[in-house]
Amino acid sequence: MALLHLPRLRFSVLTSSRSLSSLSNSFTIHKFPCKNAFFINTCTVFSAPKSTLTTSEPIPISHFPETLVENHVEFSLEKLFVPPETDVSCDSANLSTRILKGSNIVLSKYARDAQVSQAEFVKSSVRTEDCPSDGLPEFALVGRSNVGKSSLLNSLVRRKKLALTSKKPGKTQCINHFRINDSWYLVDLPGYGYAAAPQELRTDWGKFTKDYFINRSTLVSVFLLIDASIPAKPIDLEYASWLGQNQIPMTLVFTKCDKRKKKKNGGKRPEENVNDFQELIRGFFQTVPPWIMTSSVTNQGRDEILLHMAQLRNYWLKH
Picture (cartoon, rainbow, N blue to C red):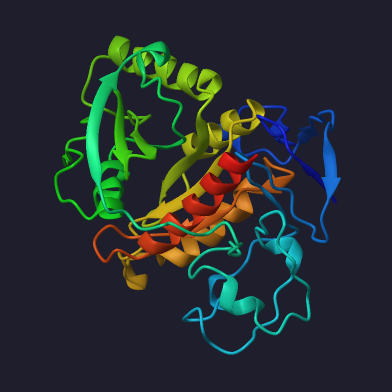
């Protein structure tokens, strides 16, 4: 499998011949040219800043060990996100100890300096050209309104009110930059979908957010937040497809994984919704992005996200 190293890795996206919201099974593969390719001994496509994996079917959550130090478990390499310069094989005795809990992500040598010791709000912008110009790498958080972006950001930095949160959708209305350890940024973006704001304003949010994704040269990866406490929404699939078609780096972050729905009321557990989303996204992507399960209430996935960001960031800086 060729490993592509490009400013924007070519994302092989499957798009429906009809509206994405129809979840049609009729798709067309868009192929992109492969340049500057080199090889690794896995079936996973990765680049800095973009990271994707090849998969034939979603990974049941139950296949993952309860901790990172349990006995060896057999994993199919094509179902895992394997970073570059990472030597893994199917008979590796300790591969299971290198998979981040509640994810499909394998740790690499670049997963270092992951802890947050300092965090500060820098500025809000509504134009990409007004964003910080210091060249530091950054990770953008985006998702449906009220999916928990600001709550996740606060959890990552262990600050309750660094990013303002609200039960009322649409609290975040600008591109908000938060500098971490004076060396990289977390970026909180307006949510898409419902928000308590006029349609004209929400349209403006969509325009400057997408302009930021396409033109921000220091963007390492977009972390697309998906609410795991409810079934998959077509708008989330549409947004993921848009990111893929525009070659934007992406990691799926499943939020609210602490919420449990009662079976007798017809609700599904978060891990079931995660599996369902993977099934659906397989219809839109030839390769599936890395994913992590999280909860801002219990801090589930906090360390895993920081380690994943660290290995993406350090590889991006080196290359």
